[in-house]
Image 1 (cartoon, rainbow, N blue to C red):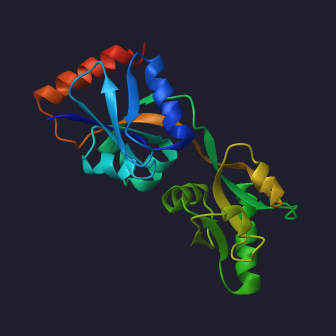
Image 2 (image 1 turned 180 degrees about the horizontal axis):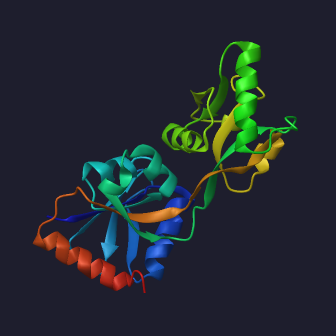
Length: 232
């Protein structure tokens, strides 16, 4: 049995992942053309490098089809129910930073906190006869966050792209989205609530708790973690 390591398949996330591993004493590389999703790990035998989109890696970790995977902590917590029982975070990697936040129209001068949002949601429903819509692709994280904050009278609207534009397009009244600088939110006349930080995400090396492991895989995993000196 081979240890399966899933890494992002393209773009800056892939490049930074390769650089991070190299900085920790392990060289991984893509093999073949840009259209071929294959790669190799140099210097350590028994590892199968699997190139996947960052969004696929949480699913493969949870299903136990890969042993290790690099993806955003936001994706793991959003896409894996009871994620701590299915995966463990081995090491934050120091790149891919982004914040999942709640943002509302800048013109809502009296709405700066979650308590304000709760009051505005109740007033909105009373005035319009339906719940305030919050556009997001992070349904699990947003729902849990707002529940813990005591915010009610809202509904989540699925948005898989251009979430910041939903308010301008009148398909939502507020948004919950990932941002690294806040510039796109500001360009769309939105402001982040002062206590509206849901999750601070970064690329993280995760280990599956469900992937099958024999003695060979355990030995390779010990070699890999030892080479990278994780936690030291």
